[in-house]
Length: 220
Image 1 (spheres, rainbow, N blue to C red):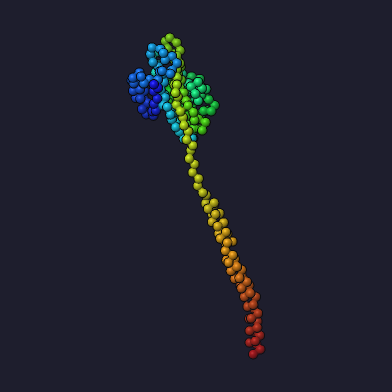
Image 2 (cartoon, rainbow, N blue to C red; image 1 turned 90 degrees about the vertical axis):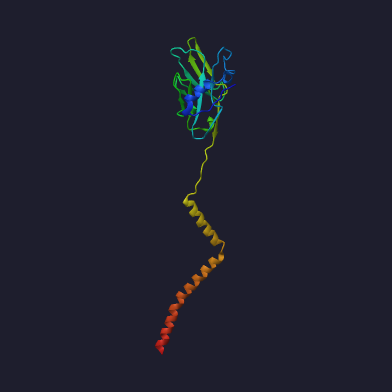
C-alpha cells in the first residue's frame, strides 16, 4: 500500500516522525525496485496538489531506508516528470534545472535530511503533469537509489481576469446614443429649421418697417 500525504511547512518535522511510526503495512514498498529485500524502504508524496496559473505550489516528500549510511552519504535528490521513467528535471548535486523550469524550481532540502519540500513558482499551463522524487545515497556497503512510484499529480487552474470599462468608452456611448435619438426624431430637426427661418425673416423685415414709419411721421 502506498503512503501518500499532503503537509504544510509548519508541521513537517513532527509529521515525518509520526509517519515513520506507522505500521509496516502502510509503507510504500511493494512497487519499489528492490522491495524484496528483508527490510523496507520507500517514498512518500501527496497524491495530488493544485495551483492557479501564475501562482506557486509546494510538494512535500519524505523517504526512509534501513541501511547504515557511509560517513559521506553523498545524498542527492532528483525530480522527474510526466511518468515514472520520465525525464529528469532537477538534480540537487549538480544544480541542474530543466530549461522549462528555469528560475521557477526551488528545493528546500539539506543532506542528510530525509524530508523536504519542492516549490514550483509562476505556474504555467504546461506544468500540469505528474512529478516523481528520487533519491540516491551511499551506504556502508554500496550506492542505493529508489523513488516514488505513484508520484504527485499537479493540476493547474486558469487565472480569473476582470475587465473594467474606461470612462472614454462610456462617454462615447452616450454621445452616439444622443445622435441616434436625433436621427430617429425628424420632427426635432424640422422644428429647428422653422425657427431659423422665422428669425432670419424678422431680421430682414424689421429695418424696412422702421423706415416706413419714419417717412410717414415726417410727411405729417
